[in-house]
Image (cartoon, rainbow, N blue to C red):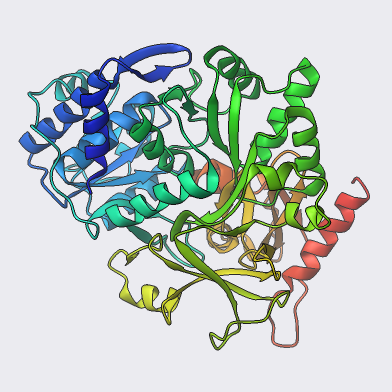
Length: 511
């Protein structure tokens, strides 16, 4: 099933229903939304893009993002949404690896990207006249026929080692995710709206499908990003808002609501995921804003679709095990199986720690052009998540450790090795180890412990400039600690646990 068919059907049934909003201003109904997507498809066809080709998106949140996505699918091509926060060099690598035939950008990202892609790479800015003409091209009839195994969304993960991997999400994967949302997360009604405050290249964008099916409204804040006061203001005016948010976004939203004497008026549902939600934070969130919160657990390889903790569990304070459930990530979503496995793939008994594994229709088709990586991750029919956890007798899963060294800052994944490799490229750096430190605003911040070569006077300004040149701004260290040596075990391996303990002690002491 082609996702564009969902838009086409909604536009046929309810053409005049409001569809796309910038802030509180409606800029297109469903007839206009579908017409623009069909026009983009026709324009892409004229540019030589065909079924199965990859087309990338590298820009900030805006309503045109949805028009482009559905235009790509209308044609039968596959979308490659790229995190708009990435460095141009990083985005260029993804564009090359995916062999994307064309890239949709905004003017800001175009300036950043052009320095890093080959001259023959076609960039179309949604801010330009070319795009305006493209989406008004003669209609491309009806959406192309796609099967459940056809590639729809190529999602690039942050790489734990080396470059990121492309996760192949098929039409069938997306349909499975949608079904789980309706059963396990939330219902959607035509009068509802989804607010895109988190990046549309990730989970927030994946939640568009349910609202397209129901003919609901799609709202992009005028700022194009998350601003707590703006979210609360828009929600109060438009009403019945749902949104995806990282825990740090929830924290800032609650803080702003408290200071303004608000209770989240107009917000129907906040789905939170992407990092640890501390117990004190979710307790306060429910106290301030009520039973509006649902937690999900997923990853790119099983998008938004491993477990869910419904709003009743998040808000419950009467069940004898309510606290344990509140600190869990919920139970398996309806279309997948979840298990805790030992190293040999044997399922472990309740309350025993092991690796979380999932299998079912939402699990990716595999990694793009990387069968070896696919075989390492999908074994014995299970997707091995790399996350450690345990499951109680009632099926509630509690995360104990995410992938060992992963840093989650503001809902974005940061892998230390990537940052370490950039810092080690500086001639003055002898050794470096990057870890995360707990932070009230961001969840975690990046800290680099640096050992300089003898007689070097390199400072944090110089290292910061190097990071800004090579990687996305949000990945660079917040703090640099210059030390004489790194703690190591008998085999010479850096003991990151000791570094994290040092930072944890400082956080506990308020220093």
